[in-house]
Image (cartoon, rainbow, N blue to C red; front, top):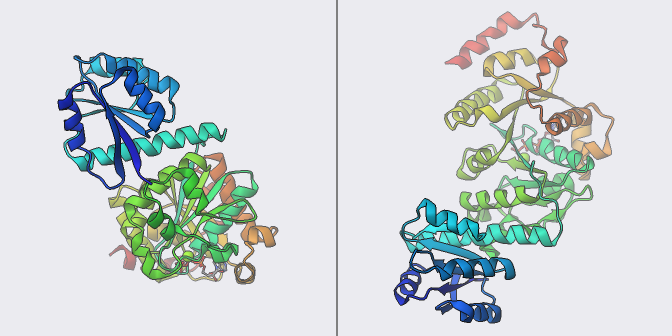
Length: 409
Ligand SMILES: Nc1ncnc2c1ncn2[C@@H]1O[C@H](COP(=O)(O)OP(=O)(O)OP(=O)(O)O)[C@@H](O)[C@H]1O
Ligand SMILES: [Mg+2]
């Protein structure tokens, strides 16, 4: 589907300047007009998506035309382009209700990007008005990340999503483990369409088109599944992911993102788009080594402030204690999820998340705790003051300081 634009100016030179700047296969010039009532008739008859006009001191009609289009044709969006965008011009445009005002573009590519972003944003706004949907002002994007495979990222992401949905939140679960994503298996949903089909088939998505590519879980969670086969992963670029995440956050209260344990463009985009990064680690020396390296990298990407450290499979029998982890990694522990192989694996094999199939289990309780903290928005929760006894220094602590030294290098 192309974006149909109409160019309006009473000066042929302006029309041809704008025409030269439109060169994109997703944008079509539907028509041109010199303005006045003729332009309104043409808009009425052809329903362009976007009207583009040149705004300048020498053409005051542009402002009255803009006002009339905004008031009477809310589905036709107006872009005003000015050669010299000064404060006076901007104020006069704002007075008549225009909000897409830009300097004359330097290149057709720049202009195409601007036109597409206006089209997407305006459509999202109009659609949400039509559907009487409540826009989610407080949307939270939560990425579950970890420095190794098998840490329990998907287990946490899927159960957290379902728990938040059971608390009446609108939740999207986005599987950005693009090669081997399996969130749909944890939830036993059929991925009819996946993120790969979405980015291939839809060039300018709206929130409604994105939702039509999502699978719906019985809890109400909408899942954007990973591609069906690893070779499709490369179809999904970081740019597309960023655009999708900004759309999703206009509708969902929580966008939970599952990731692969790799620092690629897509993962970094997810991390940068997140309000919170749940960084999953565990109690073995190899995981801790990778976690420490990853946290250093997150720091250099200026993302460390968002990190909340979760220890999964926290067991008392490990020779490394939760306290050691804190020392080694140099980051406070935010939450601890116990180890319960039977509950975790039974839930996975049945495709019923344990927050549903075993709500009384310690695993479910810890996920409930995490969702409660997320909901409270008081993310500075400190597990240490919540349960001091967990952090008693174990008798083996001195011996383990060697780990700290080892990993400090
Ligand atoms: N707290 C836990 N106690 C016991 N088993 C767990 C726990 N958390 C996860 N598991 C199990 O560990 C295995 C790996 O979990 P999961 O698939 O969630 O990890 P992952 O980090 O997403 O892995 P990958 O990077 O390969 O996607 C699964 O069999 C899961 O059931
Ligand atoms: Mg996983």
